[in-house]
Amino acid sequence: MIRSGNPDEQATGRAIVLHPVLSRARTRSPESGLAEAVGLAAAIDLLVLDARVVRVMRPRPATLIGAGTVEEVAALIKEHEAGLVVVDTALTPVQQRNLERAWSAKVIDRTGLILEIFGARARTREGRLQVELAALTYQRTRLVRSWTHLERQRGGAGFLGGPGEAQIELDRRILDDRILRIRRDLEEVRRTRELHRESRRRMAYPVVALVGYTNAGKSTLFNRLTRAGVLAKDQLFATLDPTMRAVGLPSGRKVILSDTVGFISDLPTQLVAAFRATLEEVIEADLILHVRDVADPETAAQKADVEAVLEELGMTGDEASPRIEVLNKIDLLGAEERVQFVRLAEANADVATTSATTGEGCDELMRKIDSLLSAGNEIVRYSVPLQDGAALAWLYEHGQVLTRSDEHGDAHLEVSIDATDRARFERRFLTPE
Image 1 (cartoon, rainbow, N blue to C red):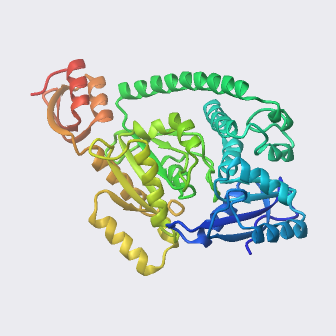
Image 2: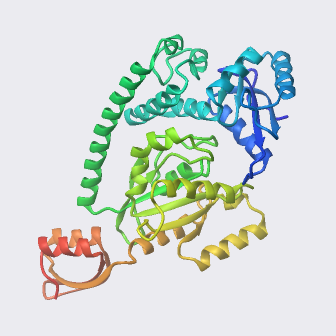
Image 3: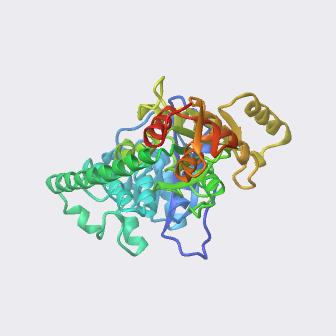
């Protein structure tokens, strides 16, 4: 049995977590899946009183799990006086309703739970709109209460903005109207984001996006590289809203580093669609850092889940942005494993080992980012009058000055610069030798 939470702390609900193991092939162990489900529940301060793996040989259309298991869980609910059961898989509306009747308790499935977390974490207007769109799309298949009992237990407005009982009164037409209105609002957000991207393109700052499985250490690494104060907790989905910061590379050039929402296995399709505006920062990135928690026993399965989401976003193939695989949390590895990963990184330009907590490997990661972004650069020689400070500053900011000698009133420079910046510089200041 796994327990989570402190009975002395204020919790938003007393819950039992079930992790059904279906007969279909799985990429990760049941114990790992159960631990992740408990972590998801803890992310919204549920007090997990009991957590169990449930074997399902033949899924039942009415309840998913067998009658014997339904009775066992009913006894657990009574024993622990639990008011909520989290079933860590997708439930049909019929299954959810039947289980609620059998257990006299509220039931939410994996999709509902993740939506709850996203609703609690989203801070920006865009984030809230995206969560509400996902929630309404999910609710549209049910048309009655889903996760709103949690909203009441939190003692305040949930991410749908009103008391739980109001959900029962919503009909399909009202839901469709709200969904349409939110999509219009999100289009405005997307246009604004595109304007910001255009502004960054004019500044010629490459965008480097961090992606990875939730809790892989992306935000901690982001803080380490940028010295920012982004929320970084040992908690699933600690970061939901995209955060961007400028950071200098060893060559002196600047890039925009973007921290994004973490991915997870069986991510609800509603969330992939609703959060596409946020993930467009990843799609538009010049370089992607895939941050992995290599200390997690399920790191290979987590990598596969992230790759699947990136593929769904159309980010695979020859046209995809280059990537660096960041093998994070190496400080938690044993000596032998650690040496293997370090050797792998030393032999591959697109692999790096880091500990975002201690800072180990971060300088080398920055060098690899610099090198990959400069891979398509040209080496150009310029002679710039020493009094033309603007031109000299521009070259130092947008290119990498390899050599410089000053004589006869001119600075003679050898600069590594990409084709776009070269054209901009020459159009604005001068022509090459």
